[in-house]
Length: 331
Ligand code: FES
Ligand code: FE
Image (cartoon, rainbow, N blue to C red; front, top):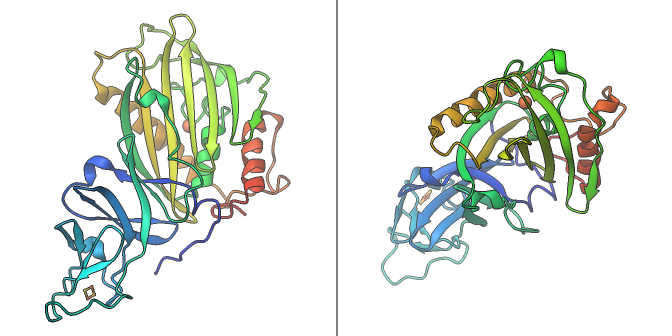
C-alpha cells in the first residue's frame, strides 16, 4: 500500500536521524520520513537529501547512482545536483536549455554523531545536541537503528518510564523486589523536560563496571525534542557514567526507526561489542511490549489511559507534546 505523506508542523521542522553515516558511501540511499521517500547521497561537497522522486516519470532516484556531484536517475539518466536542479538530460541535444521545472525538492541534510540527519521543512534549531559525543573522557558508540512497528511517540514515552525497568528488563536493569519508585519531580523549561537524582537498584552492573553485584545507579533523564531524549546513569561510588541519546524517527504514524548513541567514561578497554549487544537486548525487550500497545497513537487526552502518580514524567511528556502541537503519533 502506498505510504501517506504525514503533515506535522513541529516534526517537519525538526531534524531526524535517517541512517548511519557509515552506510552512506558512494551510492545513494533511500529512506522514509513522515511518509515521504527521501534519497540521501554523498559528494565531495558533503551529504545531501532530495525528495526521492524524479520529476520526469516518477522513478526513485535512490535506485540510481552518484556521478560528478549529482545523483543520476536510473530510468533515463537525468542528473540532479545537491540543490535538486536537473543539470543533465542525456536524451536532449547538447546545449539545449534544461526546462526550469526539471527539479527535485531539496531538504536540509547534515552529518553528525555518526548519523545522517534530515529536516523536511525549515529547521527551527540544530540537530539535537549531545556534548558527550565529543568529550574525550567519554567513548561514544552507535547502536541500532532499530525498526519498531509502533509510533515514535510510544518509544519516547517508554524512554521516560521507570516503572517498567523491573519487569521488562527484569534482572538486567531492575528487579521486581525493588519496584517502588522514589518521589519524582519534573522540571520543565522552554525546550525540555527533565528529571534527576533518581536512584534505581540494578541486579547486574553495567558492562565494564568495577561492580560484580547489584548497584544503585542515579538516573537523569531529559526529553529535549518531541522525539529525542537523553539519559545518564551514574554509579555514585566511583562516578562511572553512561549516557544514552535516543532519537526516534517517524517513518509512518505507526512505524519508526530508533537511533541511539551510548557514551561511557569507564571501561574503555572492554570490547565495545558488549555494550552494543546489551543495548540490542534491552531495546528488543522494550520493542516487544511497545509494539503491542493499544491505541497505537499516544493519547494526549490524559483521561484516555490510567495515568498513575508514578507516571509523572510520561504525563509531562504527553502534556508537552500537546503544547507543542505534535500531531503525528498522537491522538
Ligand atoms: Fe527519471 Fe526519466 S524517470 S529520468
Ligand atoms: Fe526500557
